[in-house]
Image (cartoon, rainbow, N blue to C red):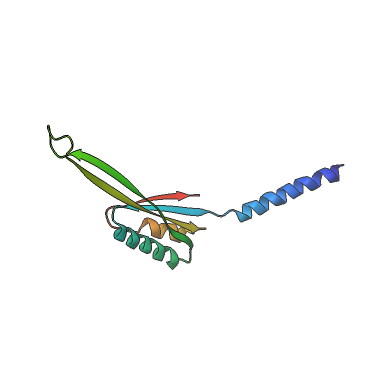
Length: 124
């Protein structure tokens, strides 16, 4: 019985080691900006930097544009029906870098992007 008990444990250990070998580390980068042209240039700069160090890239994936609308009265006191509407559009892109090495991460942290572009980086 001791031999039969050892087989499942070794199979489980082999399965765990196979799962550990198949684990893919991802660097997920979300880029946001008000201007789509600046956003596309920034994404292209990020991708060029990652490709320079032979990283595998998924994306850029365009995410839905977030639209914030604001309604303001034109008049201060009377004329309640006279209103203006303003909107802000926030464009977003998603980039996944699979199995990034230290050189890729270091070069991305030293990357200088234009103002108005915000970046969220997560390691998954």
